[in-house]
Image: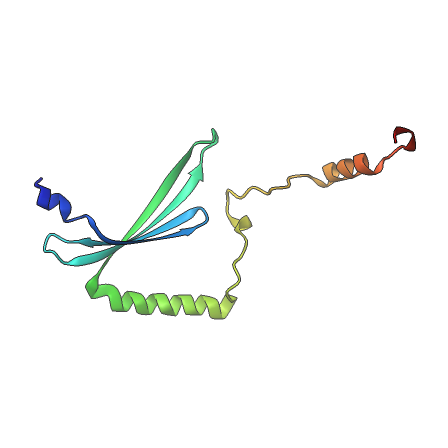
Amino acid sequence: MSDQGMMKNDDIFSRVIRAGRRTYFFDVRSTKADDYYLTITESKKFTNDDGSFFYKKHKIYLYKEDFDGFKEALEEATQFIVNEKGEEVISERHQSDFKKENNLSNENVLEETKAFTDVKFDDI
């Protein structure tokens, strides 16, 4: 492939939005005909059992002829969500890989509490 052919897919404009474990990339690229299109990529970080991590990526290609319909549908859908559920963000605890920070069971909590409240004045 020639250098010119390789350069046609170089990013013309990029914008990154970091959102917790997810990162969104908005990249403007050039077609072979030297027209522009948009790629929207969601990259989500996952952790393996051994502590290493990997990313899953999903990509949308959006062409100029679809911009108006896409913007209209996006605005309508986001407005519907805000109108129905407000702007408050629901906790990530509903995600399948959510790990509660304090995993003490009720039994463990009682034991932990007992250990702190069972004070003998002879020990002081």
